Length: 174
Image 1 (spheres, rainbow, N blue to C red):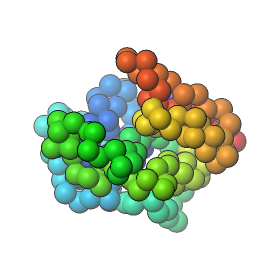
Image 2: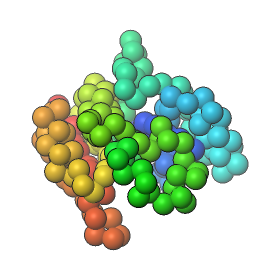
Image 3: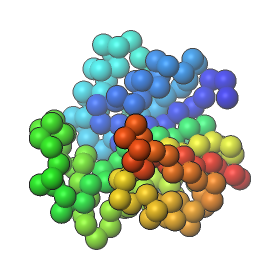
Image 4: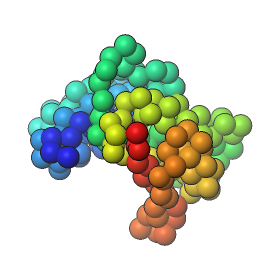
């Protein structure tokens, strides 16, 4: 839609939020992260790149914007999704620049962030809105099934440039 309302959950350095603010004309971009340090870096990145983004502190595992009626046309997230058991196999060019809490999840519940964000998205997305996730290639089927159970039956898994299952796109029907 014209002038879409966009939400980036777990914004980290703000890379996705800033890019969307710069590339989508008229977009009203909101970015949320639990870390005040990450938000400070994201604000500086937005300032340097002349991008208008509303940065807010919030916990992706909790209720986002409680008591508010705010709605979005697009929700994006690249949440933590690497099981801790895979930590040793992750290259230092990743672990050397990202805090562990932005990368890793407990082995027993690798979809914890996706489930919580999907539940928030059911309330926060406008009808016809879309929810995009970056995903772990090994959990594509599980993520697809979870999104369907959470009320997003119109979900597609997409491949990246290396032909790996790397993202989902879900449509809000209601």
